[in-house]
Amino acid sequence: MAEYADTSRSAPSRWGYGTERLPVTLDELAGPKSGSVALPLELAWSGLRVFDLGDVKLLLGLYRIVLNNGSTDDFVRYLDQGHLVRHWSILRKMLGRGVRDTWEEAFPELRRSGSV
Image 1 (cartoon, rainbow, N blue to C red):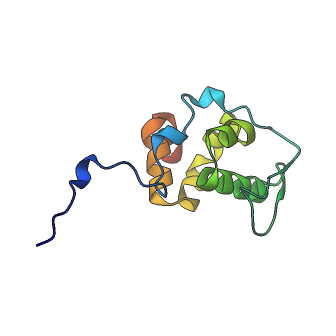
Image 2: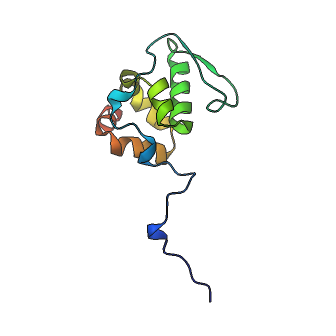
Image 3: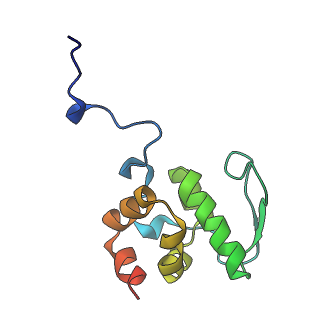
């Protein structure tokens, strides 16, 4: 009979989305508020890579890509706290449950802004 490891103490999957990826506070998000942003291939490997932040659809697309694929450094570099909070009610619908829940659990202010 095969024995199975106790998965309750296993390390998080490298494919998972844990709080270790997040900034400590939303205040750390110092990304651009306006202009055009070009994402590197590591983040946007298919499709559009340059986003005009004055176009809400493009801003939301950039944020979706960074939130899904980014690291802590990417969040700090490309995301702006004001934009994130202001648009969270729409962004949260564009994200997978794991990403959305992780951000909302770490930053309750997002959950409050997402319920508006």
